[in-house]
Image (cartoon, rainbow, N blue to C red; front, side, top):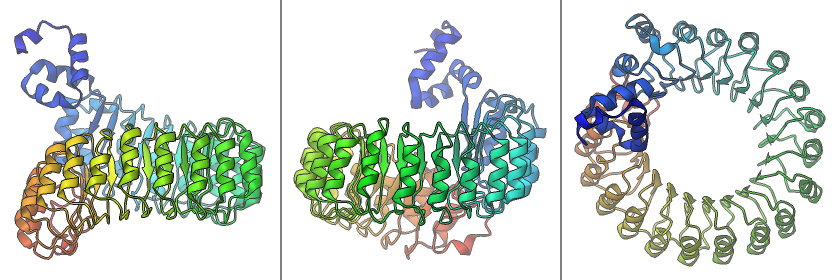
Length: 576
């Protein structure tokens, strides 16, 4: 299509055409001024990979609503000052969502400047900014229109900082405080008095007690409550919730050591509209009264009870009472057998996600029944289910064509024939084959040829995988963003050359690859511009030249990259 012909199209038609191009729009805007003009005016989301291009991109795409700086760990107060003082800074007027996850270089002064410059800001993510404390919380409180705030692992925030946010951001609807260890009952109480519109609250791993649940019970609009690892909360706290939070749809009490079936029954009896229940690693066993109680939850869609002792009778009861389930987590549950699984899936035929990690006694018979009864499965986790063979994967490839995620880690029965059967699942996006020592380049080629949507692949210690397998993989699976090749010792620099063709790759694990050198690493560094996480431990043949290449070309690498020799270069200014 010539540029002159495009000039005849209206702007509305150009916008629709650009939308149809999807991920292929970049080549078109590079060669067509009309496409470039339209995208500059209509683009709503911008994710920055290289901080040096930030100012130019913000001036070009001035109508964005979402700005993601999570891959720019080197952004600091000085950079923010330049962004806001140079150019028109018109991009701040319509910005509604700001992602600063892991932007550890940004301090309270820069954060406050940024927050104040964005008058309609509704959502901020500062998760994993571990140095953030009360001063940064005060900066966040300068956003009165804020509705969503993620502060996971902001380790320095105390009740004082939370109080400032509660007072300044009274319209908050979603708040995550996971791993904010300094927050106590006092802060949660004030939060619940000031932020009455909260619909989502995560207090996981906080040192709060049941008194906090008394306060949380007063939140009339709360729909999702997550309290993973709150070891000081007991059944008394759950009983406060029984008569509170009338709109509650999901609760997660995983790893709450003092919670029992009695407390969960209290929550369930007061919330018949519950849709999701997470209770992993907090109950010794799933009691019959609790399972019976689930019968009253007509809208229940998700149950995760990882690490709990179950029986065939309990699984049969779940299959009978919870036929609307779309997700069930039984990871590391003791007592899971073929009979129990067969009785379960005969009732729960709408399952889309099933986690059977470390359910070591199930065999081909159970997995074949799952494949036949649950054709809508999109995620199946079978790690360490080592009694299965290629026969059940034949059934999965025949019946579960919607499968997007499959975990076969440490399943010794998986071989090249099994991967050939599995390759019929052409929708696969994530596949874990770690410790499957019987697969080779031949099996990997089957996956590469038939699963072009693959974005994540784990081949940890798949010792028969070599360069030829990577040649096939990188030819067929161009969308890979995460790849684990640790201890695949047949891989050489030739394999690294193939990996350099994966332009979307952001996470690469090469631990223990004794045959790769700086030559291979340089090839990856030059071509894989999105690389953010790299593991090179025990890669003994990589010398200084390899790390210099990484320092020069891979400027998006995080500070926590796991390179054994990284400390030799941690003063290089180009490493994030």
